[in-house]
Length: 188
Image (tube, rainbow, N blue to C red):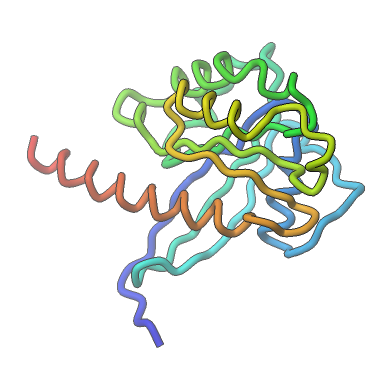
């Protein structure tokens, strides 16, 4: 048995266009099930997922942001203390990634100055609908590189494919980033 030496809390913001599968992704992560009748969050939903990584008990506080750009002035309020982020799009709906630059710019502007370089992932959802894909993996990887995402994933909430892998990767990345961030802060 691994001895837990420390407990950490990481705030993760999950954001993107409407109907890309943000709520379904979190239900697949937390409840290990897919609900076809998922209703989008009214404005914001918060869920908790606990993981153990490198002898650390980590609580991921996942904020599912459901914003139209008419409410972007709320971003700074909800992004305070964010440790990592996931921009999600639907691989079967090309327009769901068309505003990626605006989303990333708005997201980063909402972060405090010392948090501008937190780990961000690009996640394409609805992989179970692969035959209806409108954005190739090659193009998605190009977009990921262009906007400096740490990594690109595809997932299926319905099949449970890559769901846990995304959050474990992000938690490990945040842990590395926070260690570096705290060491740098102490040397100032």
